[in-house]
Image (cartoon, rainbow over all chains, first blue to last red):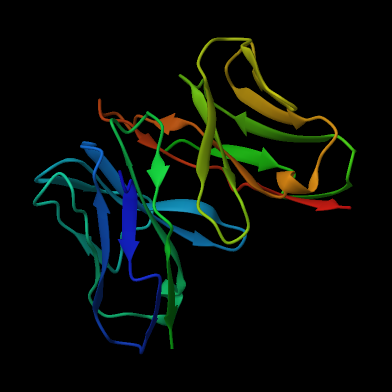
Length: 112
Length: 114
């Protein structure tokens, strides 16, 4: 099993550009989530999904969109990138929200 | 949502010294998880504590859950350079729904000097 995979590993964007961060898992987990990690801020929840077709906002959802059309995939969209979105983004999956989270390797995003 | 305070934010130790990080909540927690993130890596699950007063050990790591289930600690005995990283506590946040989601403390960054 590949576990949780994320692409790309690194990305540089200009302010105003859009992009999609990809996340996929092959563990048949119902719960998937996106976190951003900034120095001194820990991991902050952006959006999460409890199953295909169901998504909800986390702590810092502004500027990000998600959808969950399949159990395996949970892409994160930045519609108009801003420098404040420079961060490391982690996708995670689990059987349920309160159970062990399995993290992907992360995407490092720089917005200029 | 669930708020936890994790202290200290940074800890520098000499190899062989002990290390402890604390996670404190103002509300009762149903359970708490601990994760470790190596520099440049992603968080990896270490353990989950569920019962009041629970103590679990993994080699040199000792995890405790308070009697009131409002605090937890991770203690590392005789640190090694391989212990370097950020340690996060993570309680679930039911947020009034049955789904539950995990929130993370700010983390404690551990540096070990050889």
